Structures are given as C-alpha cells and as structure tokens.
Image: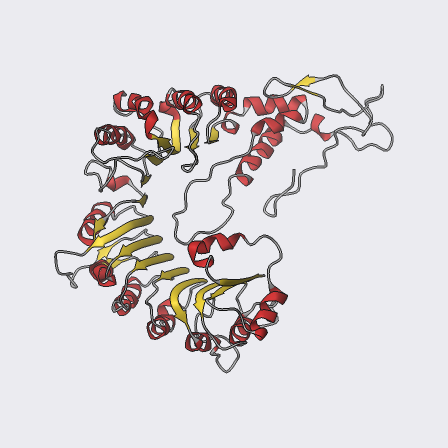
Length: 514
C-alpha cells in the first residue's frame, strides 16, 4: 500500500520470509488463502535478518484509519471535466483484499462498516450477487453509496442478476445516502416498490442520479404508461430532508418537477429542454443554497423582456454550465439577470450558426458578479477572433487558471494576444493561466510553440505559469510546431484527450504537461 503525499508514510509491514509458510486461513469472503507469517523464536524476537511484523503491534484504530485512507484514495476523481458537475466519489476497489493481509486486519476490516457500504455494480452478473449481499450485511446500518449501471450498447444484459441485485439494494432503502442508478426499462416493475413505500422512506438520501434507459436495442415511447411510475419514485426521493444533489436524467422526466424540494438543493443537473424563463423561475426558487448547476438544454427563448433593474443573486453558486441550441441570443435574458459573486467555473456550450452578439453581456455579467473566475470553457464554432480577443482582455479574467476554447478557427491574432508582455516580462493577458486548451488552430508555423514557451512555468526561473497545454489543428502541424510538440509531448497516456470528445477525432492534437 502506497502512502500519499498528503499523509504520513505508513510503517514498514513485513509478512514473513519468502520461504516461510503457514496453514491456510480464511479471507474476508470465506475463501481459503495462504498467508505467510514471521517466524518468532521462544523469546518472541524476530528471526535474524528479518524485519519485525508491525501488524502485531499496530493498534486497531490505526488499521481502521489505513482502511479509510484506502477508500478515500480509490474514490478520488481521476480527471477534471469542465463540462460536468463535481459528483460524489464512489470507491470501485474491492475491500476484501484488505482482509488477506493477516487475521487482525481481516477482523478489523469486517468490523469497519463504512468499508462495505460503497458498492459499484457495472453490467450486473450473477457472480456479483454473493458479494453484494455480503457487503450489505457487513455495512449494517451505515449509510450506503450505491452505483448501478450497464453498457447501453450491449444487447445481452443479465436481467435476472440485475433484478436480484436491485431487490437487495431496495431492501435497504432507508439507508441510501448516495445513489447513481441507470436502470433498464425492463426492471421498472422492480423499482415500483420504491413508489409504494411510505413517505420519508429515504431519510438519509443526499445525492440522487436516477434514470431509466432503453436497452438491448429497444426503444422507448414517452407517455407509454411509464412516466407516472417514474414520477412517483422521484416523489419518494424528494421526501428526504437531506436531499441536496439531483440529476434528472433518463426517460420519464421531461421538465423541472413542481414538487421537488428546490429550497434545499445545492447541486442540480438537467437533461431536457428548457426555456430561459423556466431556468430563471427555477433559480429564483432555489437561489439561496445552489452551489453547482448544469442546464441541458436551452432551446426556447424567453417570452418576457429582461428586467435590467433587478438582479437574481446566487450567493453560493460556484459552477454554472449552460448548453444551448439555436440562436445564441436566447441566453441574453439569463446573463442579464444573474449575479454570482462566488462563481469559479463557467462553461458555455453553444450549438448555433450565428456569431456571438451576446459576448459583451457575458462580460457585464462577470463584472456585475465581481467573482474570481477560475475556469472558463466556451464552445461555439462561430465564435470570431474579435469576440474572443475582447473577452480574453477583460479584467474579469485576471484570476483565470484554466481556459478551454472550441471555435471554428483560432488564428494568429489570438496567439499574438496571448504572447503580449509587460516591461517586466509578465503576461498582459490571463497572467495566472495554468491550463490551456485551444481548438482549432490555423496559425503561422512556430507561433504556437513560441506562445507556449513564453508562458511556460520553468521551476520558478521564469514569470510564466502555464503547466498544461493542448492544441488541435485542422491541418498538419508545420515543421517548427511539430518539432516542439514532439519534443515536449507527454509520454504517459494522456487522459485529458478524453475531454475533447468528437473534436479530437478529426484534428491533429498535441499535448504537453508539466
């Protein structure tokens, strides 16, 4: 087990000499496993040339802290997604491995209830059923964090195993704290039990991602008798006084529900069509506690004129993600009404065929909010260099650390702007920028390399702060840029490539990282 940078190193653990042996012992799941042990002489001293077995002396409290760290480390997010909300972390590791070290660790693992209460099921199989039941049993009355999903593209789904596992989960309904469920429609009858439960049957529930999806090539017709049942299930979830996070996804939910506890929600993600008026009405109802919100998708314009005299203040909102289809002007009333002093991450995904006449309003929104924006992502294939330059030079972005820009063409003008320096050599534009993604670039050969080099952080010997950069081009890189990126390209598997999705598939891409 490795120690992390933020925790003290664990004591050296010795589990015996290579040739020592011990009779088989039972692991956490009841299977036999042979575990080596240290040879101890009659004076209870370690054998010569052998490190002491500290597992015999380590207090149970320390062992449990090690186990908790194991859960924490294995549930941390592996990447940053500027177009996704920060979701609860689920531990995907098998805790039974901790019980194979020695009998004391096995006993400690069995007694630590929270070690067993985080269960992730992907593509349910019959082989998973015994371990699910074992973990539910050992979790006792601890709050449960449950994940249940499957590969939508697979035709062969083990519905019998999925039904058994879902029934086991639902039998512990009162202990649900965090759930992330994507369920085949064929199992809707299993979930009807939830709707039949008494109110307040999920008193511990804090975070809920819950949706039904077609499977095995089957389609779903809205209003085919499923929607009322789906609504009744959500109503049970709404009864929890601790509910804070909701993701309305999947079939059966097509609008903001009127019976949701808006006043107590902190994290909201939608997956259906909304108008600006509906978004503003929701924000007005939930404004006090909202911290993160993802609106997907705005297609309908506002029916009322924006009131420039009043601002809807969202004092705690840190993350705002807006997806819009159609004319970008339909979001004008949204930004003209909002004031978000705590905003840190702003993501704007526009699918439109017109220029962005609304960019000045976005700048006014940030100025009015007086926030210190940390991350900005703009996706708009029709965004012009002129509009982008105007925004990048705004004083509202002086604290920006991460910039993601997807547009039809990024030309020399933007790159030259990012190279502008003050007399002391510091950057005039985005002085704190650490992470940069640009797609798609059509620039003079060598200009990208010069820009990145001029901003690169070099162990404190330069004024630059850039530590991560990725660019895409529609054509092949020129010889100078190609040599630069080939020399500095990150050799490890570049996980951030996944951020680019379809944009990366038809473009040349280069990534470098500090």
